[in-house]
Each structure stands twice: as C-alpha cells, then as structure tokens.
Length: 186
Image 1 (cartoon, rainbow, N blue to C red):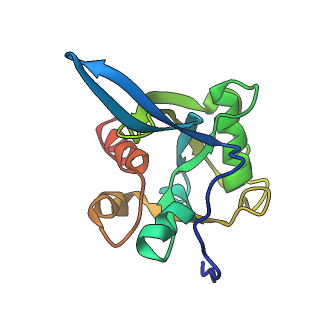
Image 2 (image 1 turned 45 degrees about the vertical axis):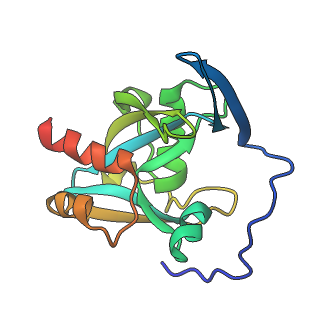
C-alpha cells in the first residue's frame, strides 16, 4: 500500500475528541513533583489466525504520530480499536474484526487473552487483547475500516512472525509482538 502524504503540520490541539492532556502534580517522599499526562481511551486488539492460510491477519495503516518520527507513518498492527462505545470489550473486538479485516466472527469465538497498560510513561491506557480464528467462509467484506481509514489487510505466515518481532525496519506495536510470543507458548 502506498499513500502520498502532503502538507503535514503539527497544530495546537483545540477541541480534542479522543485525548486530553494534563499536568499531574503530586508529592513523593516529601518532594513536590509534576508530570505531563495524556488521558486516552482504552482499546482492544485482536490476534487473528487464518486457519486455511496458516497466517496471521494483520493491518497496515498510516499513523500520524509515527509519521512525525520517521516521515513514512506506516505501521503493521493487530486489528484494534478504541473503547468509545456502550458495548462490551468483546463486542467491540468482534466489530473491529469485521470493519478492519472483513471477517464475521461469532462473539463466543472472540477469546480474551489478557490486558495490559500501554505508553505507561505518559498515557497509561489499558489494552485488552483477544484471539480469534477465521476461515474464508467467514469473509464478508474486504475490510479496510470505516470513515476513510486507510487500512490494508495483510496476511503474515506464522513461520515469519518471529522474524517480524526483531525486524527494526517495520514499525509495529508492543501488543503485536506480545501476541506472537503468546501464540508460540500456547
């Protein structure tokens, strides 16, 4: 997937919809301290295994925050989404699988692995990790997300997962790497 990015600028955040910033002040062992904090939505992420292709179903997408650092902005990730709806985490995970990757997975087949905190140095949002298996019979669309998201569905053979973990040329998330380790140990 190639995307042409132009006119990229960083502007002050005036009407945030998904995050807020704050200066935390506190005393630690009698010493006054402060720390910049970003408050953001929790999220879900799903390790999807395609049984017939013997591959993981991942997404590749443009991330503006990554672009700031590498001027490319593309990231390989698990299918994921923020928790911003009045639904269970499992239902949000199920919905993200269909929207981003195009597979309809029965709710009872979306299994929780664990949860953990991300970006603990400044945000501390919680991510809940799920696992689901898919087949071609479950394919209902090409995926790609909603609302003009630029998401490419990619299939990574299980045999290549370990190499991806240490491949520094590919931008990837800690949740993706953790899920591959979980898979290997399950």
